[in-house]
Image (tube, rainbow, N blue to C red; front, side):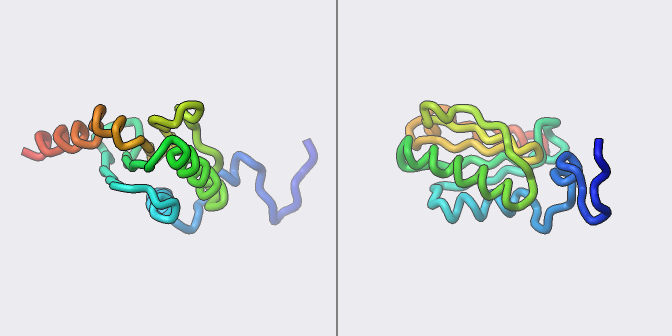
Length: 130
């Protein structure tokens, strides 16, 4: 493998590099810019080994849900976080974006109401506080 010039880093190190903005801030700003609705962020630090934050948002339609997810991939990559894992894009009823430290669920409103996952996570944490 050829040596890199001193002022460059390899691709895996680039992903681990300390980006200027926290990932949760990039995600929340992206959701706002993409006109996602009813954005809820739940801090699950120390409560789950899955991630530090879970974010739930709604899109107005399947097309909007897919567009929000695509915009998030671009925003995370541009901020230096690499490409997240994505599930659910073919149907866009519920798209899961796993960015590592933050897991984002983007729903159509009817699907979000049916699963109501943010209430489940928030209720669990309220019970733990006592």
